[in-house]
Image: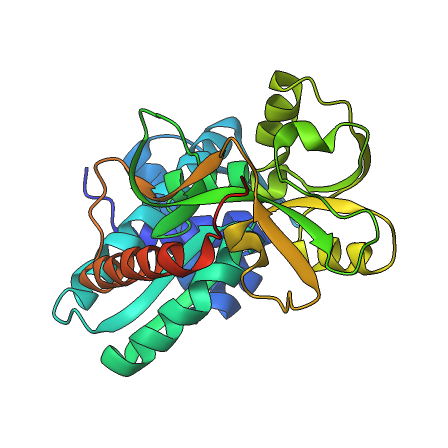
Length: 305
């Protein structure tokens, strides 16, 4: 069956536009050329893909089934060709990374700055999204790899732990009711502001509070440490955040204490199982690993006794 990529791409464009003329305008072909390519494809498949009238173009059932698979097939092919094209140089190409805002704010600036010096032709694009969506974008191939919090074991993903991120108690330094210690049990009865699961935190915090029999009054659950810190400035509240989450922000007016007993989240780089990284993506992966290790050394405060 001698079906060409051009025929498939033309058919997909017609299906998207529901018009031969609009599809032709989009891909730079005349309407007769577009129509001829679709007719040839239908003849090779021996099936009707489009229902045509003088007013509209609609997909048949067979056409619907083909279009449903074409996006994935052609996008995977384009991605493969892109990787082959970039493979000639480790130091060039576009690298797409997915992950939650907390990790992007903490890790990405230093990674971008490092690559700008040693690999200026690598272009890094970061797509911020919640944890679950970030992992799915890795599986679908929408990003080269992801940064995740406690990704767990999945058959469709490979992960490498590159650091840990302990939970911290945050209070105003001048707060009258200051904490003598930062044990989880000391949070009993406190009015708390917490990070949510966009930052991969709320489930772990709730589980730990339950383990220690803590009944806290949760006032807000937020995706960003910046908002959490702002709320602490304007009320008699305590916050639970993490070392990496607070790292990009000015915390001069706050007391940061590692909660005891320590509870840490693992930070991992994640890629689709069986899908090789391009040389450029592999270089950024290695750079991010080094960034995570450096930040882990400087970000975690000592534990309260």
